Image (cartoon, rainbow, N blue to C red):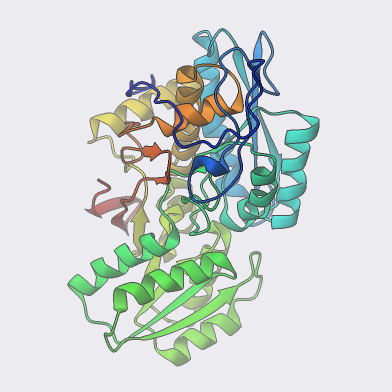
Length: 406
């Protein structure tokens, strides 16, 4: 599992309008929308992109390394670095070492855009490798699209991504609409609540989560209260008051780890004990270790393979990661690991080290097995990667899988 699996060979990029193609062998640039007309250039194997030298391929991304989202950002960064260290020790990719640079975006959209600009223009990264956080990453997307920089498997579950609206962003996680439709369907198959509530990061995150819950509820007579939250909230009393007054039987939480723990502690202090339902980040072992006492019985979306030693693939990953780093991995270490794995595989299979060649390589992924995410498929007109999500419950210090990720 520590070594990247094989997948089918790269397909030629289809449907590109090569207007004004130079006959000197240089790549053409096309623009448009709705298909890979929106993707720049054709793959010329002899061309080399920025950030590529005879000895190094520079990749990078932004993540929250400070503030309320720091725990997940730092863990994702560490997971990527561990995988790249392993690859580099084995000789690197196409005779080059992979150099990862991660900048702190503070979970802030404007900061993320500024940091991404720094990575592309000053550090001259070749591609964006992963990332963690939705509002922050969305802040950088317009810049990446304008500059036609491929972004590979960022963790930013938004309906703005995973489609040809932003064709340079290759997703490997479902958006929050799909995630919370699936989790709500599971709840409705097993219970009949009349009142539910959602506390979620304001903006696209909360709006997507609300849309997924509503999609599953349909015409059922279930009241839904949505409370937008600003990351880094210090006083959760007003939110708890709204929840208790609404009498919600289920409370969905789509917040940072620290804010989730803070809200749950505030609910516990007043004796308010609904069933809680959370996004996939709450499956992280570091979250359970810190806030497990107030998270018992919490239903959690599963986006990656559960880190259980009973699963041979998970056991292999745990052993490899522990051997490399000296510590057992968490869910977000796992996420960073697979982001680096996918990026590495795309670089290995690219016909040349230019951005169009990497896009061609990514579009050839067909059921690509990582052992962590569900099989990944991209194509000339597909950027969503996966469509599956599972459900687990926090019991004691572990997760018990209720509906596995397929």
